Image 1 (cartoon, helix red, strand yellow):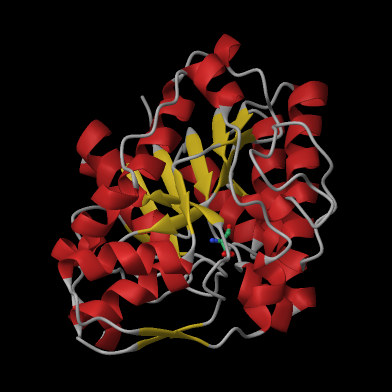
Image 2: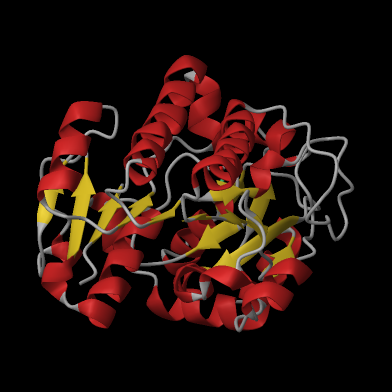
Length: 317
Ligand code: SER
């Protein structure tokens, strides 16, 4: 019997992932856990546990007592926030991972999902169609933690047979919950300001190209990767994954087709420096060949869906 725990369930990916997993295997089989005291409204239809990913003993006893078979470990600080608190970011992003990898090594957990990121790449990485295997010299704390995490995942698979699977997510665009602390967040913020009929001040420059993905594609990728037969998973560090890629100017032009009066100006801040070290596009042939990945949502469709669905009330919640 599958019993899933999603740690960091209150975040941008967590909420949508829990909703989908509950639809698939039943509400009671998917425990949402987060540091927040209150269960997010969208997850009230199933079990919720207040959990600090850094409380190793609590996490361990919960997983063992509840007979959790799969863990999705999403609790982390993203790139921009991590730069403001490097020591804590390193601690959170690494210690939580070891707790779960060790539980799997001891046989308590059968399968782990752990997200990596395009942040594992750096200024010396080829920026166009970045290959799966390439130079990786990340310059952000977040990127360093994700790269180290990838190495540890592969190590636990090689040495102890731990079934851990991972994706290098690009910037994720969604409307159910807000992102927090990422360099790619402008591509979500811009839709709220468009919907509010405000002028948007973008914190990246107009020609900064970054890999992006609509959340529906990202959730589907995560589930397809986790459902794939074990022998199909050839990469145990983390898979490159591509949806679409665009610049602030290109997404603005697409919004203008729906709202011709929309205005954007550009005031790059410290996040520009981070974005400049990341790829503009990703080669994800390994994901396509190994477990059949294929994206569905392009920029045009992404813009249409975001303008249709963004709910500005989320901004004040
Ligand atoms: N969206 C993330 C960030 O900007 C990248 O993984 O930090």
